[in-house]
Image (cartoon, rainbow, N blue to C red; front, side, top):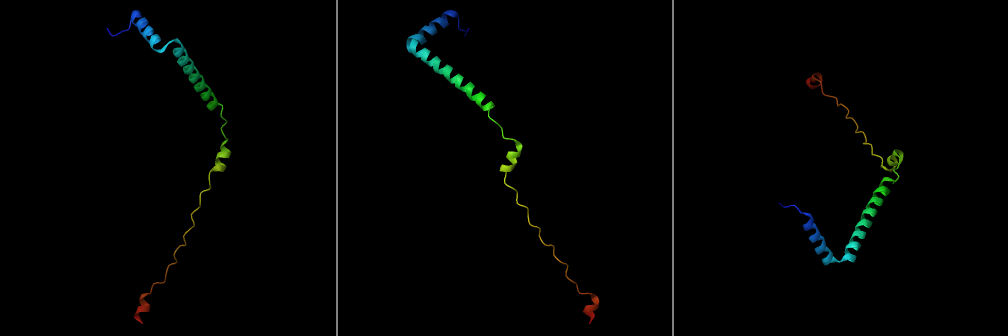
Length: 86
């Protein structure tokens, strides 16, 4: 049940042939083949693309700005108990 037998496939192929015609089907298959060939060529071109060495990658990165050090506050003199007694 639900499977396609050989007679079903032959009838299906004849219907497709009548609807699209022999020329149109061969044209579609040719376009399909060209698309696959172009895809494969694009994949090999991507693999052959040269990769820049790591030294060149570091030169392209902008340097990071170093934060400026904040001055440390100087301790102030606290009045002693002898200064307050006067």
